[in-house]
Each structure stands twice: as C-alpha cells, then as structure tokens.
Amino acid sequence: MKAMRLSRAQPVEQSPLELVDLPAPITGSGEVRLRVEACGICRTDLHIIEGDLPLPKLPLVPGHQVVGIVDRVGEGVTRFRIGDRLGISWLFSTCGQCDFCQQDQENLCDAARFTGYHMDGGYAEFVVAPHSFVHPLPAGFTPTQAAPLLCAGVIGFRALRQSKIRPGERLGLYGFGGSAHIAIQVAIHWGCEVFVFTRSEEHRALARQLGAHWTGRAEDNPPGRLDSAVIFAPVGRMVLEALRVLAKGGTIAIAGITMTSIPELDYSLIYQERTVRSVANSTRQDVLDLLKLASEIPIRTEVQTFPLEQANHALHLLKESRFRGASVLTIP
Ligand SMILES: [Zn+2]
Ligand SMILES: [Zn+2]
Image 1 (cartoon, rainbow, N blue to C red):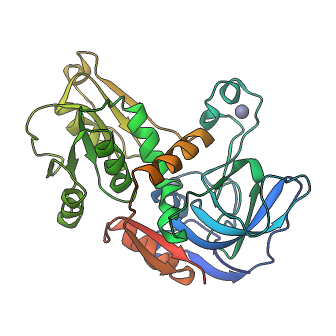
Image 2: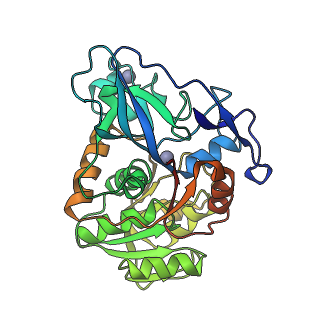
C-alpha cells in the first residue's frame, strides 16, 4: 500500500514524510481494517512530525482523523461488516482497567495508545484499529467533510465542555483553524455569543461568516468580559491575553497537546476564582456526542483537500495558517 511515512522528526519545510510502499496491515483478533478514503490533518500531526512531542514509534505513519470503508474484519468482530463506512480518532486503545478507565476518564489512561503516534495511522491506503474504538459516522457527511470532526471537532467540543461555558454566555476562542471553526458552530447552537481572536484576517472573515459576535487580535479588547475561553493557538502568551479579559469565576480551557511556555503571570490575573485548565485527548463518549451533535446542528466543515502525496505541502500550509478551516488528505 501507499503511505506517507516519517523516519525522523524534522521541520515540515524539509518534507519529512516520504511516500513509501508498505505491506497492508494485517487484521488481528477484534480489529477491523479500513480502506482509507480521507484523513484529516491535525495540528498534533505537525507537533509529532516536527518532534515537539517525544516519538514512541519510528518509522511512523501519522494521521488520526481517518474515514474509510471496512475491507477486513478480524475474529470476534460482530459490530461491523465489510462495506461499512467508519471513522478512527486519536484514542486507539486503553487498558480498560485503571481508575481513569473505570471513571469515564479513559482519555487520561496511563496505558492509552494513540492513532498515528503509537500505531500507524491514516496517511496510508489501509489502517487497522480495534473495533471497539472505531466509530460509525453520521449520515449526510462526505468522507472529507466528516474527517475533521474526528479530532479537530472532538477536541474543540471537549474543550468547550471543560471551559464550563453555558447557553447564552460569552465565549472567547483564541486561534481559528480546523478545531475552532467547528467549535464556534457548537457554541452558537448553544446560544452563546462568540468572540474570536486571531491574527489572520482571512480567519476573522470565516469567523464572522460562521456567526462570531466580534473578531479581533489577541491583544485587542473585546466589548465586555468573557465568561469562558478556549485557546487553540499553541502560544503560551495567549493564556495571559485571555485572563486579561476573563470575568470573575471564568474558566480558560487550553485545547492543544503542547504549547510554548506560559509567561510568568501576576496572581491578580487568576484571583477571583478564575481557572486555567488543559484538555487532554478525548473519550469515545466525546466522539459519539460530537458526531450526534454534528448531524443535529448540522455542522458544516470548511475543508481544503490534498492528495496523499502532498501531505508535506499541506502540513506546511497548516504551520503557516494559510488556509481556511481544516485540511484533509484524500485517497482515491
Ligand atoms: Zn486505563
Ligand atoms: Zn488531533
């Protein structure tokens, strides 16, 4: 099978992914194999490929927003059949035994393994995953439209929940890429007023088109204070900018898997019971809930597609925030 594979972490400008021909993965007991149709590109892929995260497996096929058609089912799989269209997300498997797994926090499992990180992912023609961690997709979405829901959408959704935003409240979003352009649709569906902070005029235009109440740069002052905020940009300074305009008792959720250092902050910025928290991975329930909501709202993903072979180019554009919405690799 064709795959785009990483042998050594490098800046994307150096085209670190190499087009290779690999044996298609074999389906183990309890696993399904998908013939990949589309694989979303996530900012985490960029962090993996450039070595911002420790790499547990090399060489590695990245990609964890995978949509494909079941072409093999392993022993013991009764949930799915050949021909079903399914999605694979970041959470590849968990231990199922630890306190986190037992208490609806499988996203924090110590033994969790992640797609396109510990295991080869969807920048390839075929991928395997345990059937219990694979998701049926809502009707009405093409493979390319559905792919960004699987991580960008789910992480944004979990971050909204962790930000404690309630219907009718005022929400700030910092950074406006693949994840935020989905999160804003959920927040507006919940009746929130959304304030979007991004340096890109093109991203501000998309935010206004999707119903943002106000747009500006992180250092600008929105009219009035925010009840909650979600930070998508992996820039520690944003935490201070968001705290500066956060109401008493408000919460900031940080959606990224990594971030530059948060500068020293004056205690007065978090005094008055302001909370700053991170968001780590997602649970299968998060994926189920977001996919259900996606068809109810319905969420419209703004997608730019690239052939698999152009993964390096697409990642480079992502690094420079040079497109609207989300980017997706397609495999004919
Ligand atoms: Zn566990
Ligand atoms: Zn992701």
